[in-house]
Image (spheres, rainbow, N blue to C red):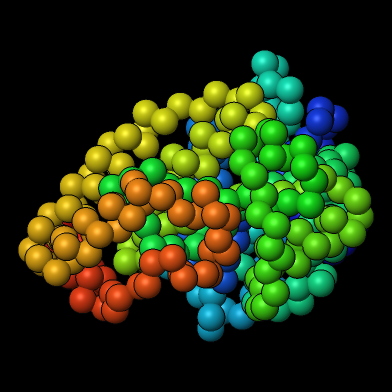
Length: 299
C-alpha cells in the first residue's frame, strides 16, 4: 500500500462499488460539483475510511491551509483528500465519495493512489463531476452534459453523450478519466453548465441537478429538503442584485428567451466551450453588481 494512504477504519467487503469524485479547481472553479459530493456525504451519512497525505501533492502557497477556532482553540485545517463510504441495504450499490481540492503536484502518483484505493474496494466504476460556465440563465434548470465512451451511461443518466471529443488543457479529472478507461473500467463524467455571470461560490441549483441525475442512475433516494432553503435564498439574492441593474436584467431576459426557444445546448450537443449560438457580452458589470450585493448582504 502506498505510504500516502492512511486507513481510518477497517475496509469491509462492499457491493457493486461506485466512486463519485470531484476536485475543486480547473474542472470546478466555483466548487459547485465538489459541494455536491459534500452534500451526498452528509445526506447519505457516509463514514470516512481513507485519508491521503496532502504533503506530496499540494503547494500550500496555492492551496492554503485554513486556521479555524473550535471551542476557542485555534487549529489548522489541512487540505486532506478524504474518501467516505456510503452504504444502504436498500441500494444496489455502495459508494466511495471523494471531494477535494485539485492537487498541485505529482498528478500521476496521485492518480495511481486513487486507482489503488479503488482496488481496495473492488471498485471498477467511477463517475467524476465538474461544473463549467455557459450562456444560460439562472432562472432556468441547470443543464447537465455527459462525457463517456460507454453507451450504457446514456441510458443510466437519460443523457446523450456528444460526438465531439475535447482537445486542450485538462485537470486532474481528465487525467483520472483517461487512466480509468485505459484499465477498461466503467467511467463517465457529468458536467453541470452554470450561468457564466454567477462564478463565485457553489450554486445550489447545480447540486440539485447533479443529485437528481445520481439518484436516477443508481436508484438512490436523496433528500433535497436541506437544499430547498439554500436554493430559495440564492435565487432571491441574485434577483435582488440584478433588479438594481437594468442592463443586467435585460441580458437575463435575452438568455431566457434563447433557452426557451431552442434549448440549444441539449438540442445541438454544442461543446461547453462553444458559444457560437449565443455571443456572450461583457459580464463584468453583471458580476460586479451581484458580487457587491452579496458582500453587502453576507451574514
